[in-house]
Length: 117
Image 1: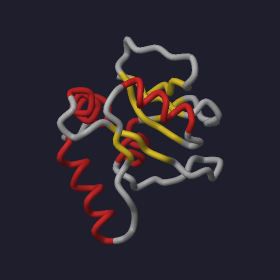
Image 2: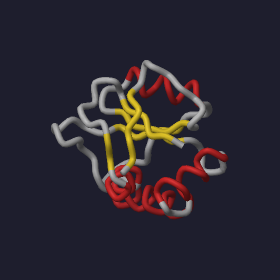
Image 3: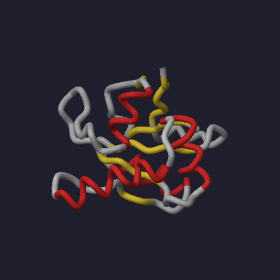
């Protein structure tokens, strides 16, 4: 599993707690002040399950609960959902401030790979 960002994103590495804050929608801006736009796979997708457990150290239902709280309280919105790795790469590539994830064996030079500390 690897995190990917829009090619113009200024950071090149991220720690797990920051990644967890971003993907639970608690952190909404990059260090340079740009808005973060989060892209994920559907809740039941095998990559989403692996990402949540391995990279973030949470269960997928915990992410869903955090997103639902934001939406229902009116303090935020859920991440955008994509259906394939190709769509994930395309959306990250064309959306400034975007972050998402793909499998380790999927390489694409049009997006930036974030190192996870």
